Length: 131
Image 1 (cartoon, rainbow, N blue to C red):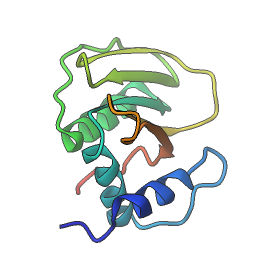
Image 2 (cartoon, one colour):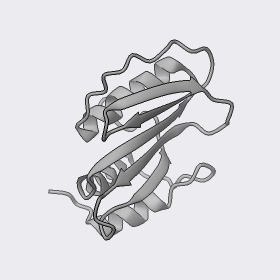
Image 3 (tube, rainbow, N blue to C red):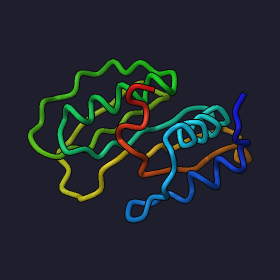
Image 4 (cartoon, rainbow, N blue to C red):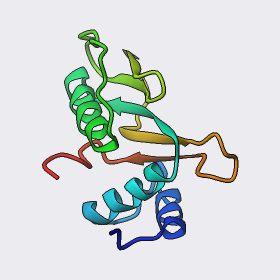
């Protein structure tokens, strides 16, 4: 059972932005994310990383935590990359990325407009490492 209810989880996650992320411990952040994930139908992930290997690692750990198994082989791109994963179709792609943000955006989607339909992040790229 979660220690965080859904409204608290949404408020906590909404406080994240690319410039000034709040200082939260990873277990609390993971708990909050799982609350909103469980209240939505599917998710998209947007991963901004320094390298394709870092992006692949983040994709693997986030996808596993969210209950997905991505099937696409991502190309070995040099430099910073953006990887997008679609949880509805289980597809993903990668492209070069010139921005300065690093982390993971999680976009929760629900068919019911009163359910969770929001994007949270950028969350730490290593949020689910060794959890």
